[in-house]
Amino acid sequence: MDCPKCGEKNSENAKFCKQCGELLNDNEDSPKTDNKNKIIIAALIAVIAILAVGILFGGGLFKSEVPLQSMDFEVFTMDVPVGADFKEFTSIPAFGNIGGLVYLQNNGSYSSEVSVLGVSKMGGSVPDEMKFDREEGNITIFKDDTGLYLTNLNKDDFSFSLMGRDPDTMVKMLNTIDITDSKALSSDDSKTQETSSTKTTQAQAPAPKTTSMSILGGSFSTGSELEDKTYASIYVGANHAGESVQLQIWYSRDGSTLNHGNMVPVTVDSSGYLDVSSADSYSKFPDFAEINLYDGSGSKLLDTRSVSLSPTSGTQNF
Image (cartoon, rainbow, N blue to C red; front, side):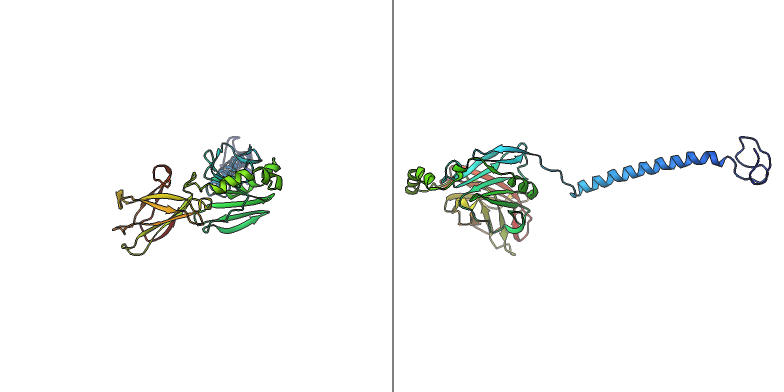
């Protein structure tokens, strides 16, 4: 092989010129090196892409959608999360099959994303802690300080509401509502006449002491001094306004009980809250509260809720 620089003859396998030291056979190695570099760069790009997608999903920029399927509620249909199980936990009958006010709780899948379904002929009020967030079409969205959402749609003189922590899914659900039995949802004269005797009986009968009731949320608050009492505000729903129950709250700190857990008779106020204060102040701020909700007689446990607290003064929502 002749050296391209000085012309000296070299062996075919020589890598450098024996006369001037010029690099020989460079053209044969370059394509291999270039191909190897291209492969390495492509692999790095693929790794970076995979890491980027993982960061986006992990950081919540991409959220997996809740799968939906149609469910028949007898007088209307609506898409609900796959595996959801909505069971009625309170109602005030007034208008045919669906009643004047019905609340159903999701006891199945995605119960955090979509917790409660409400249908009201009376257009129930929004809890005070729920503040207007935004509107999407004809759906109004409210939100509280804990990240709980309330979405509401008015359709054919009825109010459909969903409560949970995934407003996007709840908006999709409300947009799929299809009323299949308009007569059952109607409040015309004929329907009123059909139910007039029932309504008269209901009006004459005393209001039930307690219907099925659940602890839907609330707050605890204490003053800045240890001698201040601890106050609890428990939300059970405005549909229970006027009902009498008994409330028992155990407070503790570091696993040690701070009070005697007395059962306190209390009446649900017009906004759907039970407001009670501790009998005494405590030597320490509580870091845990266990709420037991009983019927008016105190013999039937309706619901229970455990709440972890920061052992400081101020108001803490749950």
